[in-house]
Length: 161
Image (cartoon, rainbow, N blue to C red; front, side, top):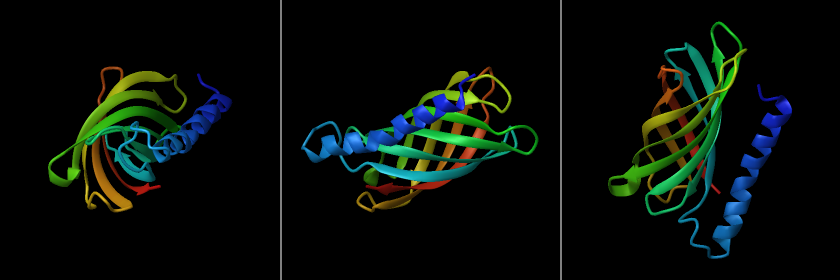
């Protein structure tokens, strides 16, 4: 079971990613193809009857591809608070790239249990034009862990740095 100290180290590393990637982008590196965005999200895990609160970082690495590290806290009606960390990638489709889908790895820690590894599949819609700084979204997400695949609906926004 990871300690709080370990979790703080992970959060610190993830929080430094935008600064490092932004610096590379600012020097004309071809690593990133647009601004980094960061923002909160909230949602509902319908199978586990839990509200969620989290955030994500979007790192565009191609014309339509972006890496999306994220994390969420789960607040179930009955039971202890849990968490999930994700290493996802999303592909934008269609004109303007508002529709997207993707997947990635998930590390899920239910309250009072041990950490499990699984994977995510998701699709969503961003309602803002491509050059807007504030981009609201709605996302439909499934996390496959231990032969279960709870469905989660999330809403949030990304803010371009």
